[in-house]
Image (cartoon, rainbow, N blue to C red; front, side, top):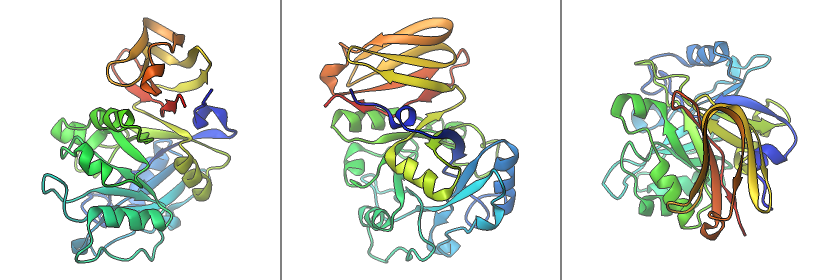
Length: 300
């Protein structure tokens, strides 16, 4: 049986946000203040991903001076180039960029820019697809993108378009093996921090270990609920979690099985309905409606 790397590999979980902005681009707070805010909120790591655009000087913000014992940072940026299927400027999240990553070329397209970031060793993801109506055709043009934001806190607060579930499930249905992110995309112009994060499984809270875990899919995404363990078996999956109102296993199209019991902390769900769709992913929801999302497993 396939296993989720977040629960099948050694290490411990580290809490982090990998999409955030500062005054190096269009954020309200300086890099040091942003890092301090996340550190003081109990986060283990942060990626400051300022907008990599000419008008901001193509910043790759150096947050290394703000690392402290127990708190580290990843280096990244939000990349931009023309143009999506709707004529929008591409937004491409890249974490683990080198500082010498070259500015976007005058004729460089979004897919070419994403491919260059992948070649540079970055973890490349598709941010806030619901916010600007990114299509599956757009996503298909970024074959190196390893993940999709299923939840973007700023987009949810400011535009009611923070949900990327539609794109996650369309890509999975096509057989695209993407993983699932929840992020803040905080700019601090409103109360847009600490609403979505990752729990990344790694042996150490160090940049190289965290980046390798992201690339390997050893994490889950959450708005608050904890997923404590997932055990995939031949006929069923068992999930242990913080107190939940519902625990679900979702597959292709409308395929789903669920346990809806207030206050539950464990459920075992049969997989028979999900196997024909090729994949399954877990969603845990608490009484307030906040969700946690596992990465999908595949029935090869």
